[in-house]
Image 1 (tube, rainbow, N blue to C red):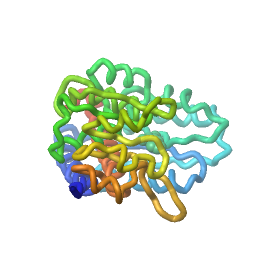
Image 2: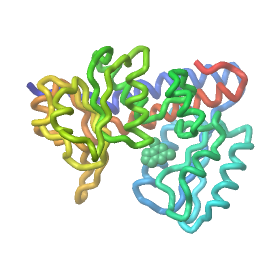
Image 3: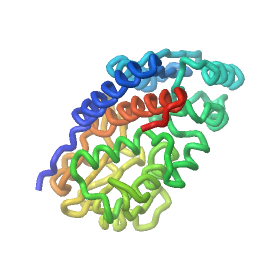
Length: 291
Ligand code: GUN
């Protein structure tokens, strides 16, 4: 078996087109142009590329956007002041503080300070709580992007055993929470594995769908994958001058029924879902109910 490739670039482009069309309708109806503000602290080259890609996507869907780039020496108080200013600016609908932040800044304090209606990353405890209760305001971008990839690829999630590898606040935990909920492309039986899990390979071997988000190159090998399983690779690891995922792609594609490449799989979807969330934020702040 050679796996079907799940084309994240194509599915993200389709999602962006839908968001662009809905944005044009929203602007025509309200006169309000959705706006995303990003905040980048320091000079991490990977973060700078991610933020640039987010602004390119904003232009494509018709959003206003503004980037705030602060030096690596920025204090927590200075960053809080900027977030507070953006919270109070009615022309800014979404705020994205790019992670990681320099070590003198407590990430949780900053993420907690973003206004919950502008929290397009869905990191604020109020938004995490709404997700856990099955009534999400915003869906976290990467897990939501994985869900759209599964839906658009026709993968049967209902009743499937999904094994998520990794328990991060950004991917692993919310991924499990979204797929276990009642609903379309959900109703899964979810196991979340992590670095302390006993017998991890034998658990992964029982998965119908594997979501690898552990941040270790080539962690998922072919012997861990049941014949015909669907494999979603969230990892982006730099090995020499190459970007590789968490999955040993060349071997696993011979066992899986469908697999995402890295790059060109989950990455483009994350940004497409950020666009979706920014439009939702603009709707919520313009008196209309979010669709
Ligand atoms: N850094 C890596 N991924 C993300 C993300 O999804 N959101 C933010 N804000 N920073 C990140």
